[in-house]
View 1 (tube, rainbow, N blue to C red):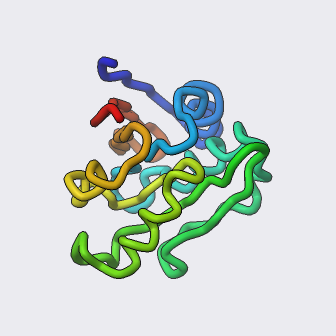
View 2 (cartoon, one colour):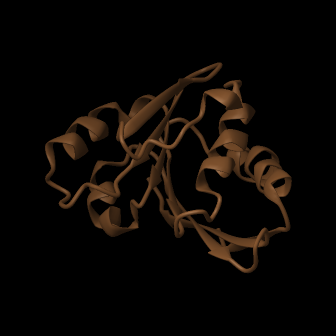
View 3 (cartoon, rainbow, N blue to C red):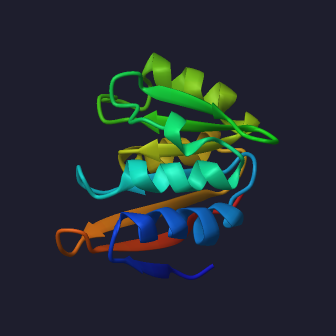
Length: 149
């Protein structure tokens, strides 16, 4: 799969891109790395993404302090994870997460630093979505497949 680039001029467009363009491409067992600075739109994206799978988007919150939020979709859970405070791939939390990963789709914020480790554990494909802030509300999202499993 080649790289796909999406442009958003507002929160609503970011939400729709997640729900209509990207979520349908992922399946149970896949991992999606959400990469971008604070305020880039990762949580907004996640709200649109989970709605595609039957989750109420109002249940979505940033997992910065909880490390993982679980949203029960129609057919399987969506795991929303934050690796910001995880310093090493051999962290106990990392191992526990990888045990449940294949049971649903996993969205990982700040996960790019652990791509090598994630590739070893992944039951599905790994994708990276990089958010670039172009203006106050304008974003560019670059979506690409990192690995096939």
